Image (cartoon, rainbow, N blue to C red; front, side, top):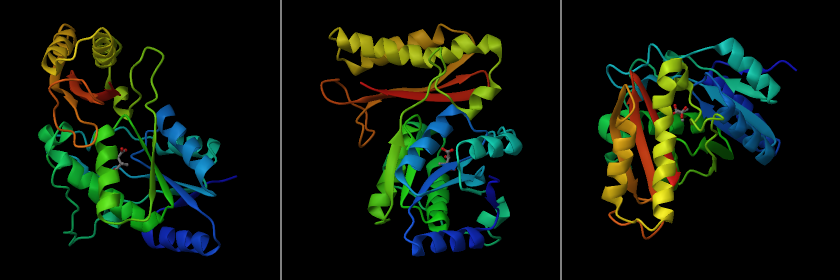
Length: 281
Ligand code: PAF
């Protein structure tokens, strides 16, 4: 079956209205393309939860800061399209930037607290861009349910919060992080890594596993756990730590003692490639 590629937001809205009027439910997976097994697992989850599966591919300019990799972000629409077809995607929403952001665009969604932590510190405009584009995509695709990966944990928290705060009638479901066989969390940005950088990229997962083991052995001091994780990461070439934090899974505020549910999240640059990962502790 050929996949329906929809470049216009008015057409997407009309198709979604039609489906909803017929009593069909819509499952939605928003992506920036260059799809990998992580995205495909989210599509399978969405398909199991709704009558119709819509995927969007849009490299959203408003979530990239100056000097970030907007221009270099990997793209392969032909391959993405064929992967979507294999997964039984019904509609692929594939807008241009001018379709999404008109010439006088000036309205943004900005959360007050969650972006003050983790990735929001070094990427100050990122969550404003994500929250804005996801809200727009929700208004265009009109899903009953939307699926986001746990690898982008802070993004998932931001989306859940905005859905709650703005009373959006959309169920948000998360899908587990999918890893390569060596443990590296799947990400479109892994395409930037050279073979020699791979061991350095693996330190993110190793630092998470080391922390979890130490906690199992009775260590609870967050600062000491973070320091060991930083030392492990920095012992590999070409690594620079953006942050390694242990925080409350809801507020994302740092915690001092791991005596309650917590999440460790980290962002590390390997050469020029910025990678993130996290683990519930
Ligand atoms: O996670 C992503 O790929 C993007 O941040 C998203 C949610 C598609 C918004 O552009």
